[in-house]
Amino acid sequence: MQAMILAAGFGTRLLPHTLIRPKPLFPILNQPLLLLTIKRLQNLGFDRIVVNCHHLREQFAGVLNGIPGVILQEEEVILGTGGGLRTALRHFCDEPLLVTNGDIYHTINMLDFYRHHVDKGNAVTLAMHNYPRFNHVMVKDGKVASFDNRVEFSQLAFTGLHV
Image (spheres, rainbow, N blue to C red):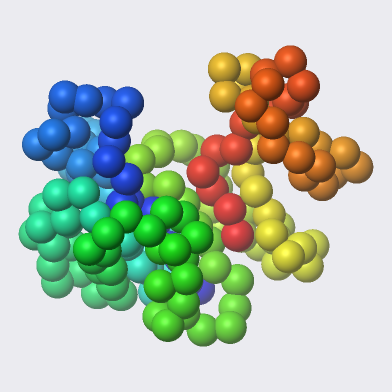
């Protein structure tokens, strides 16, 4: 199985701390969050993991050097989610790709989520939850109907995990 961890952002919500360390490398239980995510993915059977990075990218190389199955994609310019994914396509085969943001900690069972996607045969599956502050997704009949920043019309928030 294959996965991509999106880790190229600037971490602006955590300024000034992110001036010296990218958010995915912030420690959780004395380990960079990114390493915890990679270990979880590998323990679930994901054997090809691409991590994209941009902001303070030299720090990622130091942390990820020598980890089997992990490919670091350093981006000279910020490409956004779509650009990062498009650039990484050459590393992946024709099977579903689990994508997660590199700056989130969650307890979602990623293997169950991945299997749900495969079993349903969806083109895309988004993990969402009700978190009113960030609810921007409208759902109708089990499908995303729209993304809307006007909270009064939104029902769910995207977690940053998708296949």
